[in-house]
Image (cartoon, rainbow, N blue to C red; front, side):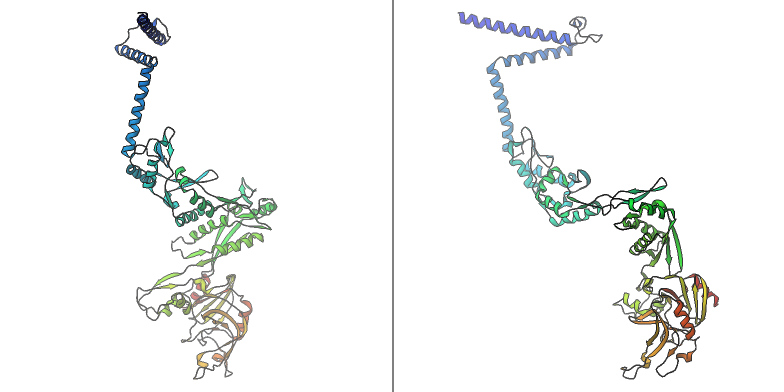
Length: 581
């Protein structure tokens, strides 16, 4: 009886405790509610009507609170609830086991795979690999660019990666698990990409140089350069391909390059002196005897200069873009025929910097062209019209039978520069008029002497064109098949006074200027007179005139030979041509 009363009393006490707890919560809620003035007051609820929704929420909160209190104070119910949760979770995970799905919180390369079947995960990985995933390339923590995995030679085995994700089981709970992707690396593709990347990554060391700031020259200290180490980067990629793909990041291995000179001070005064003079580039076209001048501003010129180990010199990477601008200026008609040779220009400019010169002459050169054969053309006529010896036309069109030409055929015409291998002498020019058999010599644009000449006969014509003096020989020997015996084994030889080579007729055989020609029979060619074609291709003057020309013309002096087939190209050539009509 006593035991029964005790249990009843205990239940009464518990019920009373629940009621007291409920009242306390209700009072706390009401005290926390703000009144109309914004203050919380235990009396505010006495002046406010509760809405039905509010009452319903309060009632629900009380019921839930009571339920939770009841569960906490009844161990059997607590155990039952725990068992229930465990059973539900067990059923949930067993469903993953039997369904073949990947467990929660599992990913690969940042792609979430939890809850997916192996097939679905394979598709998701392949889609991300081809459309979304990019590898960021870094140098010393700085982003350089991004690349697709395929560019780096990486191929994903999406199916095996998905199977690996399935096999990790519950490893992703609760903190997640990232599966290493299954990859293949194509070494050659990766190497090719990295080699191409060197154009963007490699940076030459910057030797001390100069800039124009606020109207004066200031020195710029030298800086280190960078070069991509392709081999080490490839080795890292091969060993850590899965890590690269997972992190979507590849750190490139680079080496620093030290500059040769870091201090600009030793040549600062020299640079300031040179900049005080207006520096200019002069483009000279020896064929047209024309010049074009490009004044160079101090801002540009100072950027071209750098401190060398033993002298001031040229900064090539700063000058080369300007050469491109010059070439564009030379070809405003868009034919791209003329150009300044970059290597040649840099050599001239280095010499000018070393010698403190304020101007540089740059030779305007010619590109090769294509000629379309017209009706009635012959290869010889094409060569003469373009001002080149015939054998040079044969050389650039080797394998072609130049005796068989049809309208519409095309021939390669070599650059005009093949006829002028030496630096041209700007101040001197010799013009020969084949029509009038006349020669005029110019110096600084003025006629210094002129006389009649004899050129080649019909079966050994002199080639028109623009050439130059190649060499000097006071007495040269020559011959012709007309001076050979019937067997062709023994040929007579003639002597030519004051010979200067002009152009090659064939490799090693040269036509040129000369004076009197002593034939094997002791007679003079043409009887020692001039004025009509008489030679085997050379230009003959009377002996005393030939000597005068010989002593005046330097190697490199330009020779312009004009005719109906090849009209003058220069102003001086035209002055001679027009004076004879």
